[in-house]
Image 1 (cartoon, chains in turn blue, brown):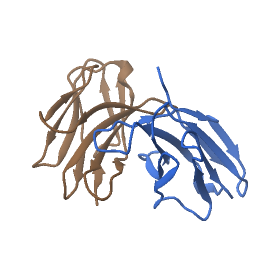
Image 2 (cartoon, one colour; image 1 turned 90 degrees about the vertical axis):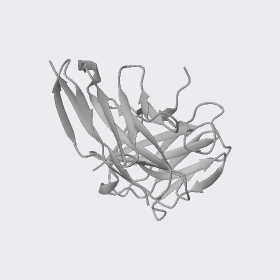
Image 3 (cartoon, rainbow over the protein chains, first blue to last red; image 1 turned 135 degrees about the vertical axis):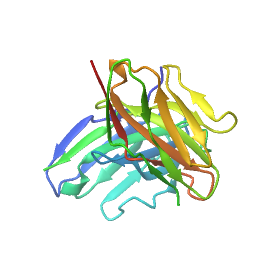
Length: 116
Length: 114
């Protein structure tokens, strides 16, 4: 069964260090999403790609976060420098095309980041 | 702007008892509604969704939810829960307008007790 892959599953880093997360969506899915889920809260969208283009990054803290999807397939989310408040689960999701309401988003297992 | 409220952060219930997880939303336009389930240290899985048509939607594992437009609610129910239903449940709304993004509630932790 096709799944969204993410790595690493867990990451511990010290504040001010750089971290990067990788996501490989389901084959053929044009739309890719990165969410941040703080403990006890629901996921919040950080950035959305359609193929290699950013569709929405209005909630991405651009002073320290960056995301890319150079070939329109896999994607990398980077934080530099990491801060204590960045500790969270980072979820990647993909869908067949740009979310049109009923278009299901498939989620990966997430990367749990702990910043010390 | 759309928002989702899940009124209960934690719901403990005994095995084989019925359960209802509440979800209310606010939006000025048409919406699509979803329930996702998240098991520990895993991503979210779609449980069921309302797009149009019948206001009562069902999942393959016995959950159902009813869209109530007048009360702007989409409560999730199951007549008899199992230990394996223990998980976090998230209600989400997609607004058919300029936002075009999925907005999640804060989640309800369902714990089924033996």
